[in-house]
Image (cartoon, rainbow, N blue to C red):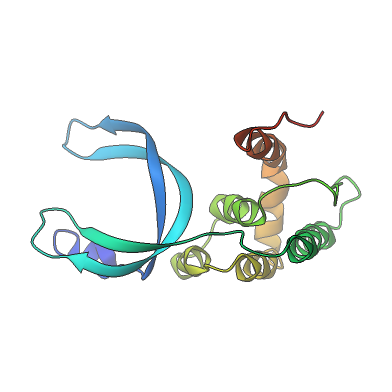
Length: 174
C-alpha cells in the first residue's frame, strides 16, 4: 500500500486484494535487487499470512473475472467501448461490439498504462468486480491527461486484443 517505503525492511501494510501472476522474466542486479516482469493472471484476496517466513507468504482465495451471464458480459463490453469512444471524441476510434475480448483484462491494461496517483492505482488494483473496474476506468478517462495517454497507447491495445484471442486457442481476427 502507499507508504510502504517507510517500513521497507519490515512488514509494511499490504492490500487485501492482490494480483497473482507468473514471472516471465527476471534479472538479478549487481546491488542484490531483482527486476521482474510479471504476467498478471487474476486477483486474489489474502485469507491469512503464514508467519515465520523470511519472505511474506499468504494463503489466497482467487477471484475469477468472468463468471457473468454472456448477455451481461456483452452489456459491459458495449458500455466500456462506448464510454471510451465518447471520452476520446474521435471518429478514428472504431470498435466491433461482436468482438470477444476480456473486459477486465482490457480495463487492467489501460489502467496500468495510465499515469495514476498511488491511491488511484491501488483503487484500480483492488477492484475485484469487472463492472467496477470498467466504471473506474471510465471515471479516470474523464481527465484529459488520461485521455491523451490512451490515444498514445491505442496501437498497443490492438495487439493486446489479438493476444487475448490467441490465448484462448483461436486464430486472431484479420
